[in-house]
Length: 489
Image (cartoon, rainbow, N blue to C red; front, top):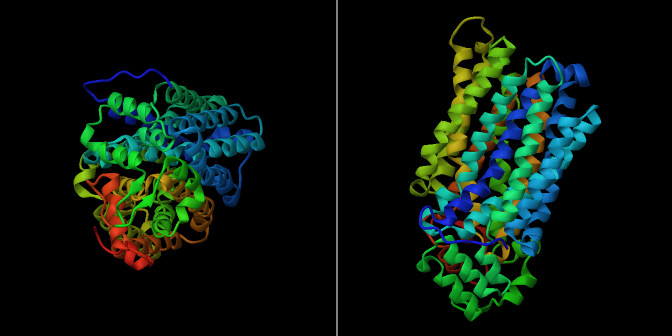
């Protein structure tokens, strides 16, 4: 492990959270690049014009590999450590982006996206797991939202890098954004390997108590915020359910892996987390982010330059709105942001769908198209300040140590699978119906808000051990999904 020195301000746990969050930056930058690149003139000149289904396959080629590696990412992080898994994923991602930048035919470009996906699935879910395990309870919501802020910054950089290169009279117009992305990813991988201290909770599970204590000290986490977990590991028991339960590091190591996420006491949480993360994509957010130029063109921005600029402006608006949302993440809480955000998102999608269904958007002049354009902005802002933060944080902090990484990455795998469906079908749905996709996304979002209203408990402001104790007391003995997940603690 790299040498660690204690910092007074900012504490090392904040610095480590920021370094870790750059994984969100490279994820966001890829999202911001791929949509604009695939409609550039030089890109189509090199690879040809594709049908809607092929366009969807190119964009979504990253997602199935990401889902596959996400299912294994929890086990990898349990074996090699959180920081090393993050670094390895960043390196693989960088290799994939380099292949895209150097692609001489479409097959090579798609291969690069597939490799990118394997790396992305490996590091992305572990970002929130890592920050959850090093952050004090009072600031966990804010710190675990850092990757989302960096995501929006990366999205903005991605859009404007494409806007800046689109008029270059060579293939650099679409290659240069991917070359920059690859450089950022490799830098992130190296920084994570050498500068991120390992999660002290992971070290405790391995039985390295002295090393864990040293890392806690270096991170600058107050003793009151780590005392309980250290005592529990030392005693080897959990009192949460009222019955001592053996939790030695050896036993915990044997119970780690993705099967631990389906143990009787946590499987309901795992299922709800996977559902919420999957439906996060069924809101249609990446359909909007991937295909923003196409959506703005269909809404009446006829100029290719205008639609590109509108896409970049939307990224700036999202980034600006994310800052106050990050500051107040711990005040708003996970449950309220998920439910309230879900109802707002569904209303926006139903509004856009209704305008298209009534042919109001197709008028040369009129308010309809401007309402749609404004609604796209509002939708992206609401999503990035509610669902993008609250759901991801809840998934990680609702799990005990032995299943946190596995359950979180399973949820991210669910997210990738539904993301694939959205990325693949959005251009097809838009070709066949101007309004059907919006009603579909709105219905999925509304259903998710209702499910979370019934079953998602609030977890803000509690230590990870307090959360686990509350879950155990909530449903002792035989646990049904209804009993385990009903209402706040």
